[in-house]
Image (cartoon, rainbow, N blue to C red):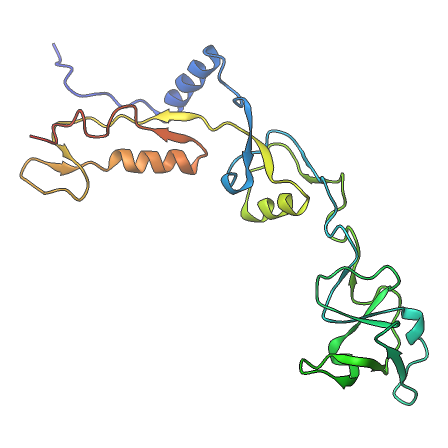
Length: 239
């Protein structure tokens, strides 16, 4: 009679078949319930439904660079030989990158392409600017919805969220996302010869690391590792 002292290896294909069959039998073969989570907690999670933009990005016409907001038509005759002077009181308004364009304006003259008249200590024109190049309408302007248009699809369902995806969701006016709940996986290390990693080394004792490796793999695969008991409560670490 052969003594059954050691465990027998199960081939990977058979082990996977058994595991999948057990999940089917328990009604757990498929996504778990959806949950709404904050974007800062969503890296690596899987979207449970499509993500639609709640707002456009940008949600206003914005300056694409530092300069002066102007009416494009007021610059159409500008040239090196015939520069045009525009008053900062009514025809040109200083603007920083990202600032909203005034309602009356439809272009931005880049700061390096203007000559300020009576500049202040920051180099901004107090009275007027001189323009030597004509501008087509909407030059140097980020139009509303240039990146994202409200109601458009941002991400499909079943998408593993990357850092860039979180930025896209935030840019679309959302602070949360619906994702499938991560499966919880129990990790139970056992063995009287085990001691905590970094603990004192003694003959017959070895550091316990399998659970650390397994838990990291579970996290990398999208699961949530969970030690059901204190990791060394069954190891005889106090002996």
